Image (cartoon, rainbow, N blue to C red):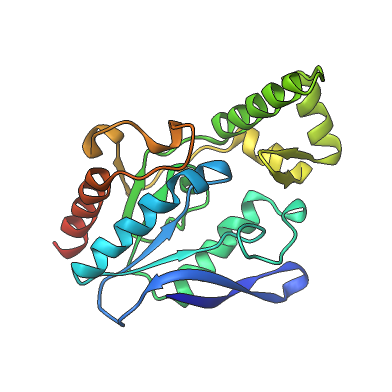
Length: 224
């Protein structure tokens, strides 16, 4: 089902954001930080399928929208990674999360106070480089000549649209240097899940065996 939650907004206000939830007010409650940007689309089906399996295992789960993404009305071009991290802390508090799973770039904005996992975490420079490459390839097909250096320079000065997302200079600057912070949260590598990474596939896809494997790792860790 879809629920709303109060998210910090500019000037000390709050904005209502959406989250997909399986919430039966159970003791074990997992907050899921989605992958960032285009990878969120590629991994959405896997994420929801994992939530379905956790629900059957007696575990509540919550997948909040990041401000500026999906149905959010907050302007992405005014947000930074720090805003996203503050939003996820607020989501964890609102949903009374007992554990957290950060997927891919979600590890850059994960609440560090919660026990949990990071699935195939990635640094911000890698995410930015992938989106710049997509932009350059699309521009080349359209007959435009763009380089990573020129795009970064423009983005740091006035923002930039990458993979359909309008990013603020602050977002681009923080992505360049962002790495998942040190934490006691465990790393789940793709080798633990099996199969080829869904974020590398040309189109959004699903894999039941990967969903089964990831849900099993989480359920075992949460209920121990």
